[in-house]
Amino acid sequence: MVLRSLPVLTAVFALAPLLASAQAGSTANTSRIASITLYPGSATVQRSLRIAAGSRTAAFACLPAQLDARSLQVAGTGAVRIGDISVQVMDRQLAEGCESTQPDRLRAAEDALAQARADVQALELTQTYLKSQASNAPGPGAAAATATQMGPMMEALRRHTRETQQQLHLAQRTLQEKERALKRLQAEPGNTQAGKVAMVRITLAAPADAQLQLSYQVRGPSWSPSYRASLDSRTARVRIERLALVAQDTGEDWGGVQLTLSTGQPLAATSGRLPRPWTLNVQPPMPAVLAAPAPTARMAAAAPALKAADAEAAEPSFDVAVSEGSFATTFAVPQRVSVPTGGEKVTLALGEQTVDAALIARTTPALEPAAYLVAQMPPLAGIWPAGPVALLRDGAYVGQGQFNPGASDWEKNGLSFGRDERILVTAEPVKDHTANAGFTGGRIERTLERAYQVENRHERAIALQVLDAAPISKNDAIRVQSSYEPAPQETAWGGQEGSIAWQRELAAGATARFAARHVVEHDKDVRVQERH
Image 1 (cartoon, helix red, strand yellow):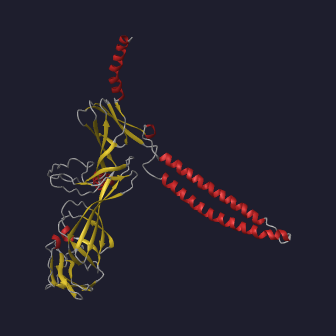
Image 2 (cartoon, rainbow, N blue to C red):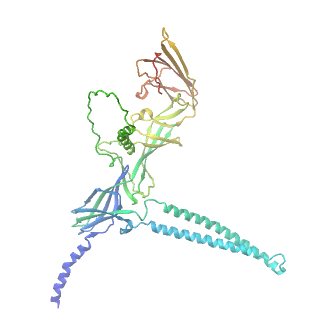
Image 3 (cartoon, helix red, strand yellow):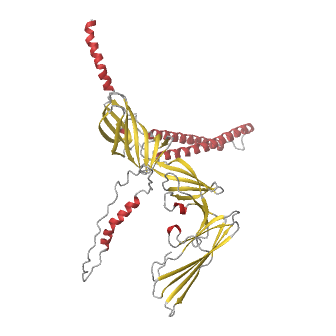
């Protein structure tokens, strides 16, 4: 009997590895997000899945339906061999394990609202009953014994009425809160059961336990730079905090992920425009009768140019800086972060830097009789993409500005920290006089005089900068002579011809005057076109 059982036992032991291999041939979806690289308008998501030895297929389920199938990349550790890859998009409710938690939350909120309504209705019914009991109280003609019982009964009625009113007030408030909670839940975007999800199936061969990495590109998520600049006017130091606003609505929550922000633009064009041929030819003689072109033809000819301009304007504006040895700037967030789906903006801190600044009071009296405190800073170390900046001066919030250290005029313009109310700026009335000139009076001579006064009401000296514009002739038929008092330090401030800049230190309590005189001369028959 033992000898006859040996072949059966041998067959069972021989089939055991095959049965185990069949059970391990398919890996269930237990993938997790390993890391995310976020760009302006898109993201590269990398998921990791553990596969057992002998696996023949693997599935990454519950992925965003808008993932770009052309961007899929699959890699495995060890001796894993990758076969074909397929992508299937299906309704969320049909995908196993991808059911949204929204219906359960909605049902719970609806049940809580129904309970709150029942409490209110029960208390309203109790209140109605108490009112009916009060209206049925015995009248003045009742017996003396009944009158003796009235005191305790009325006291009990008052006590129950007061308690019912208080409970009804609290129940009505709870009902309002439950109604608002249900409305908020119903209005949540990107968390609906009716959405779609994608599933990536991979054919593979895994001789041993390994890790499978899936990388894909998804459109929609984005980040934008933001900054906070705090000026200490006593020490003339500026602390600049680098921030990032992150939002995504992919349908999957990013919980505790390793996030890297990049200024690269995978959605932008990958090649630049090429020059068109530039030809010259002799214009043929014009016909005797030239018909005016139809307006529609003009509009049709202008349409491609307008569309091209609109397309360029619609592209996201993000100043990409090139870091040393790279074509994009990346910011690796040190801590793991969570960004829920639904478009909620999450603010991340990317570090800070403190720099020494030169403080000046800048005014353009011809345009506005006011002075502004400006911090001029040297080029900042590192990469700083352009973005909005919140401005604080000595701990007080002064407003919003634009932060762009990469601009060519950064050192000249600096960063303005609001109006300086202790500097009084006055613009004197403009003197504009026109007269005939020349022996025969055939020329016109126009004289313009402008003057400004600046008073320093600080208890300390300030560095003052007064800006003004001078007329610039673009034609030899117009001659311009300008004189100033005092002489300006620059007549082409910032490389712009005609931009006048006076710069000086103004002592505490002192007043300075700045004047400009311009003489414009031309023939009487010349019509001057003036733009400023």
